[in-house]
Length: 356
Image (cartoon, rainbow, N blue to C red; front, side, top):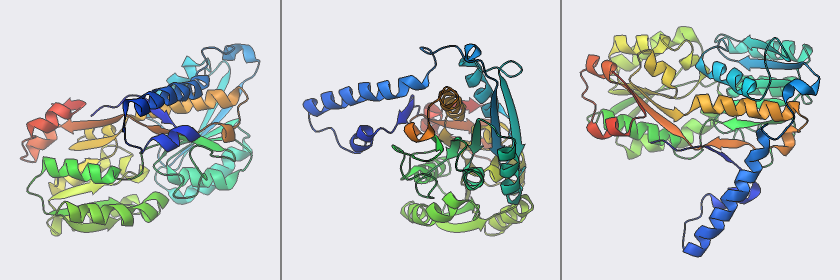
């Protein structure tokens, strides 16, 4: 279940990703392409560059998020900055603006960050990235945790993002949510009714959900109930609706509203006794049943590498975006027992983390 590294979409890599291996000769070509891809990725590391402390500047980084901008992923981001020589209190100042679930506040928070004149803005999730893009066309933006930025028009392409935005996506488009649903079906094989929690104000959900989720549900034999939620106070009624509709399982499509704070949604779902799959492992560690998603700690560390490169003079338009290639399955066995579920052995064997 674990795939190492992140993929940088150079023009050549974008061509070779979906082509089958038809001969050993073509395999050798791919190996050469992989080496070239490594050369593309390598400059983002600061190992061969001057120490940040010697650059004679105090860097200013603004962070914009939909929650509180705290947690293990943000800690990993700071660790990534320290590993490249950027240390808070010495040569680095970080200002965070978190909407705490009030996404209508994001435009004002983004404008406030722009007025602070940071060297780089790090925007986490689709809504903050849209607010940051609308607020500035000149300050570099490092995008983190947006599933498909091309789909919603944040960048024209991953290989050549252009403009002032680059960064790391959350998923590889095409079938990711279907994979989550397959895993949920393995966990609850008798399930015939599935509810899907989504946020219509999330551009990824609004544009990608109709094309991916209903067809996947039909293929897996699920009757689908869609639960649109825009605000935190709508979560409890939505979960209650799923319970009254006798949902056998719940798909939680990734959104900051559903992840922060991590314990909020698992507590509501536990009261309804519905098995659920999430995107982020923090929610599972807080009591959720299972999650399948990218290694968010690595994504945020790579975000720090992009910030470092920009602080050293690179332009976002010249930095191809990356996609994750490592995805993790996390299972909370304690929650499964509370729901009366025996986790199938094949799922346990494939899990990257099992919470007893």
